[in-house]
Length: 419
Image (cartoon, rainbow, N blue to C red; front, top):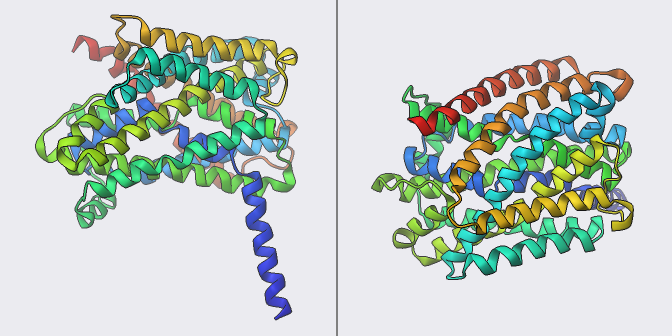
């Protein structure tokens, strides 16, 4: 009996320890399903039904390996990825990489505020109210809160992604067919199919994720002793990303695909679901869009501020007061103001802005992955925590595949307007 009590006590302690450490991986995974991501998954489900569900397993494994390396570098070095790139490859390399990252993140931040505007308008609220309120909210959240407070808010927001899961069940898909499509890979040479598949890869694996998660791990001060819990946090975050993506594609595949309804944005998907699955399904989908957009509008500027501040050696931590990290907070504020104002400018082609930012993301990601692999395999930086051989084989293979996919995405993005 005493042995059983000790065993239960140890299990509870491990469980409690995980909840104390968790945060960076789960938040990163949740925010990856932001407004552009939900739009891409909605479009895939509406155009191709369940035919692309099989790719989600590949994405989950790829994400898990990449984000685990990110968290390991943060735990071992106590530094963010921007700082490590500067120290290992010099300021010039760091400048070019992070300038491209900042540009891409600025475009994606605009997309997040466009998502806030679209979600608000579905509920009958003008963007001229929701966007400024959203901007002030995310600014105050980070500026006035400690790291722990900010993390708790983000974790609470992450729970709201359940709205997409409920929407998927309300769509009443044929689950036997869904499961069959998940384990039956299908590849079509149809250009629209290939472009959508590439877009899913490019949307799901984004360079801001590596910078944010590693900076958050360092900011939180997670030690090597707690690395197993942080590794699990990374794996759970990768699962959350794909799990939410799965239900978005299932909902749109069940209701929009059979009727030939095409959508280009998450807002259009939410509106299209209303007459088919009822207002509750549509409202939940719109609520999920609002939540994911608010989280994205918080994390994308934060990720950029972390990366740029680290690269130039500035103080970069949510735990620091404003007077000790002025460039960090100025950059964060500027990204939010830019994103919010752009959505309120009449006549601005938001779709072109999002396509351009997606193309830049596609160019930055392969570079970031290669730099990460070079850093994590340097014993001068990582000591005995470099990658084992099998991990290197898998990661380099995935880096090559992601590079090919994102290169194709860049090319097709620039060709698309002329098509």
